Each structure stands twice: as structure tokens, then as C-alpha cells.
Image 1 (cartoon, rainbow, N blue to C red):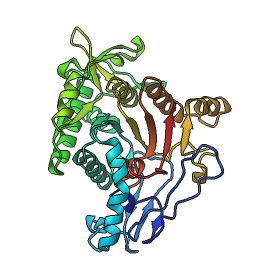
Image 2 (cartoon, helix red, strand yellow):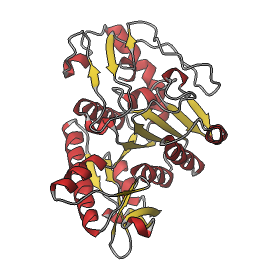
Image 3 (cartoon, rainbow, N blue to C red):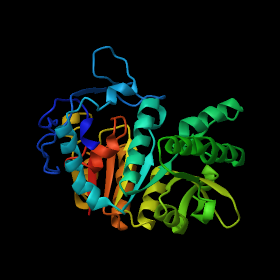
Image 4 (tube, rainbow, N blue to C red):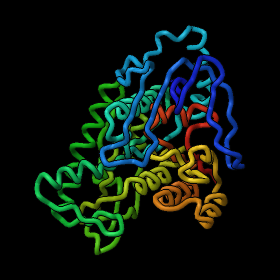
Length: 354
């Protein structure tokens, strides 16, 4: 459940959360009952291949799924966890939550399985998750295999016709169907899509110098509504199309925001390799738990929000401006980060609201 894994250490009893400084932009915390579990997550700067992830109860520095076994949790505490999640389950039942999947959570097999488990949990309690993914590292691997050099311009992949063929093959094929398989094995019912399916995501060229890098011009959510209404989990790769049938490589964060707006989603959640917005980066104690749109603008102008966080906050702000109730930027390296953000009052990342 949501409460039994978090960032540092818990003992059965009141939740011991880290203080995130004296910032006024914070959600209130509340006590929670949890089992004894030690979680260690390397919080250094994200490296190619993902950060080191350790999840274990003992000091043997080894992990297997037994380390997340809750069978030893006393029955009363197990019931407490369920009752504390209930208000959130009731609040978000039948609501749409768009989740952008990427970063270390996509590379590390342990975290990947935990994210999949969270996703299936959300679906099982009546929430409608829509799962959006990219796959940059996998694209680079396959480009290298077939001898195509990966080129970037201002941080964006230059995508000529040959590269786009590989991008579509990897994103809409290998990565997408791999995630669908994992979700189905975990008990969910996933359907893999790209923007061409049902003409769901229309796009155009973003910049001629970038080739087939696209920006979204229209989202047709009809197919996604049909799937969600019937209990399926849409898994969407970041490939769009135009009327001529051309394929476009779209930034997955941007696509997730556009999908969330078109679906009138309750939440947009961006899984990243950072805690969220920090007032004094990289001081984790300065994490800001809640921002409104005005706060975001002020922090950008002050330089507090800078670098790679700017486009993510921009995506979060745009989705809220277009009707999404809340956008969340959370650390996907933390086990069960989705459940902790959705089903606890404080959450674990930064929430942006109007």
C-alpha cells in the first residue's frame, strides 16, 4: 500500500518524515502507520544507466522482492494502512491520472516492477491511469547497433527519416510492448498505442533543423476514453502523426501534459530523477511540496527553478492552466513513488496547482 515504503527509514508507529525546510509552499503532513522497512536510494546526480537503487531490510546490501513482503505486518496495522488510503481511493475513483514514465524508474528492473505494480493497483481500485513513455536510452542503443550516429541540437534529438524509423520501431514496438507485457503479467489489462492509433496524436514539425521532431497540434481522446471506460490501461509511446501519415518524435513530458489536458485528467504525474523543486538545490531538505502558478513564476524569475527543471515545471503549469486539477513532479527512484504521492497527504514530490 501507499504508506509502507518511503525515502529514508520507518518504524511501526507514527510516520517520521524528513523536514523540508521552512518554505511556505508545503502540504501538511499527517501521522501514518507503517511497517519497519529500510530503503536506501542513491540521490546523486542521475547517471547514464540509472542511479544505484538499494531496497533491503537487513544490512546485506542485497535485494529481492521478499524485502517488500508485508506478511509480517500485524493485522491491525495492515487494516490501518487500508483505512488511511480509503479517502484518497474514494476521491480519485473513476478519475483519470496521466503518468509520464521515464528516468531511472525506466532503467532499473526493481523500480520498473514497482512502478508497474503501482499502476495495476491504481487501476484495481477504480482509478483510470494513462501511461505515457519515451525511451531515449533504448533508442540510442539501437541506433548504435545499426550504425546511425545519434545527433542532438540544443538538447533535442535530430531525427532524420532513417532515425525516425528506428525511433518508431523502438518506442512503439520494443519499449511499448515490453511495458504492456509487464502490466499484463502483474494482473492489469494494458493496451499499447502510439499516436497513429485512432489518429490519437496529431503533430507537425517543431523545427525544420530537427527533422521529424514534432509538436502536438491536436489530441483525439476518444479511443483512450473507450479503453479506460472498459478497464484497460492505455500505454502510449511518444510518436505522433500528421494527415500525410508521417511519424514524429515528440517529447514525452510535453505529450503527457497535452494528453492530460485533453482527457480533463485529475492529475498529471511526471516521474523524474530528482525529488522535485528544491529552494536550495541540491539540498534535499529544501524540497518545496506545493506550488501554485504564481509561485512557479516567481521561482523561475528568481532562478530557483532553473536548468532541466524549467521545462518540467512549464509542462506542469501548462497542464494546470488547461484544466488539470494538479500536476506532480516526483522522484521515480523512490520505491512506490506513485502510491506515496497519490495516497498520502504530504506526498513525496512537488505538486503544482492553480
